[in-house]
Length: 181
Image 1 (tube, rainbow, N blue to C red):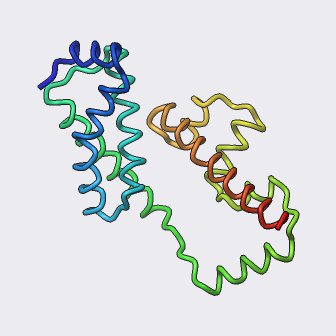
Image 2: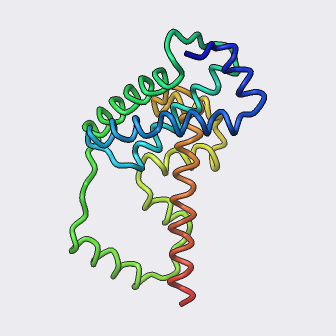
């Protein structure tokens, strides 16, 4: 078991190597847990990423006292984050698209090749739309966005904003590719 002080020194001295070592030792356990409980490998990566950020901030900020190994702590945090995600998903179930829906969506895109970025934002879904508009259009601080969307930490809101922005970029790039071809 590592001491918190030794772990902090390792992170400050060589963050990349220390985090890589933690990742290699811990992520397989997290991935297995998430997949056994209804998630995907991508879900496991997202949960682990959030847990690792929280862990790093607490260790470097000297607000964490470990009573177990770092891997045990990270697995426990990931389990809790995954349970919260499953709970959130049951409150807001995902709707599966059928082939018929996909054909209708493709037909709509073909009919309107010059969609605006705002229309692409609308297609991301309510949560992503709210986060991106709050941050970029209304210039709300991430603390306020985190509170409004019930994220535990500001960092979680930051990660979600980044994911939404990446989804927007991907959809705009795909749209531009279809329009130019």
